[in-house]
Image: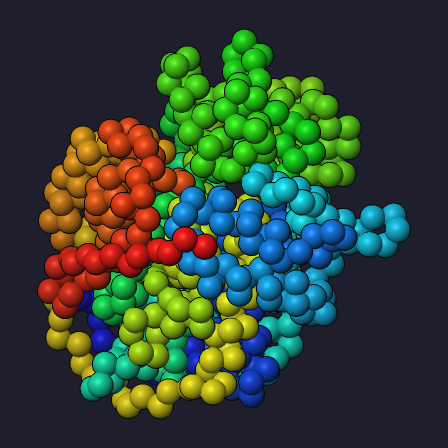
Length: 537
């Protein structure tokens, strides 16, 4: 299966093609260059517009006194609700500290105490202070800045901006040997082209725009997962979409990216209250307002249902140094007329992070030879059913290095690309809003067989609204439809509640569902699924 496009009009080549410019893509590009391989880095918008720069939280790593990788591992496994890949988690926590030190060596500047030591804080689900921050609540922006500076200085990395990845290219043996792209607007290459390499790494970020409200930027339309599916790669854990519990509520008609109120605010002492001022999280979880995100999101949603109100409140008035500690969040609140030093902040859950993606091994390899995935596009298994706060930036850093190590010793030598005669797909752009509305209503925080069936019916209907005019908006809508269809299938199959997947009709966690759901799309656009047993850690 492939997207409907025009014929490629230009070709670029490098040893390795990296798609995406967040922490995963930039780090992978730099690590691959360290192996003396050339890189073509393609990114959908400007090179600094990915999800990474929006990360307000931080990077989790066992760097503090008394903390150990084993303790970080335990917290990760608990948050993952029995579905973490134990081997991948061990890799993450063991190699995480060195990955952070490597980032610091590349110029990233983190907040420090008066003594000069790096300042470490706590976030939900962590039992130790192990979160590094930069600029208070601007960690992602600083990480992106440091990595971009290093990429810009490297003559062996060619950057192509405003390039939407379309599909993977394969040789006669089925090995991926490049991708097709559409470069938007002015640039050294315009229109449809080919980026050829001996391997392709997908690091396009998440799929948050599949929902009506999200913390993700507008570019997060699931493009990498779409490419992987159409290439025949297996995807996993797509039903586990983490909804950030504290996103600023802007009103019933607000859509797209919404202002995130970082979990770190609760780490500094803020707490949730209902309309009567009651702190309802105390009766929900031993960690109260610092419980894992799925627990908090569900509790807020239940409270909203009980009160028939569209939001709850975050009381952060006890934080004295708001402007210094959380300057970005303070500015966001002020832009909407809220002074968090004296006002309660209206918050509700919104789609935040996809734990699932293209299923990869601990070296980032998908099930299709020559195709790798890293970061939110990938499913390494480290997050299980629910990502532990601040593990996402760390995952990008750690597994980017492992992909580079693997390529240094196992870089394939594929043949030339062959024509793809599989079925073409393209939907009209206007289905996008209908997809996000239906997904929010039927496959959001609250799910049931009835709601999922309704959304599946909507998606089936929308999938018939074909377009004959290739354009960016149509390609994005088609990717969102494909990813939404896969997500709903997985959510329907998993008849239990676990982590960030909450089935109202199956409210308990079942031992028989301690397995990963793998989905695969064939050349004719037909789905199949299988299971991967997850052993006790």
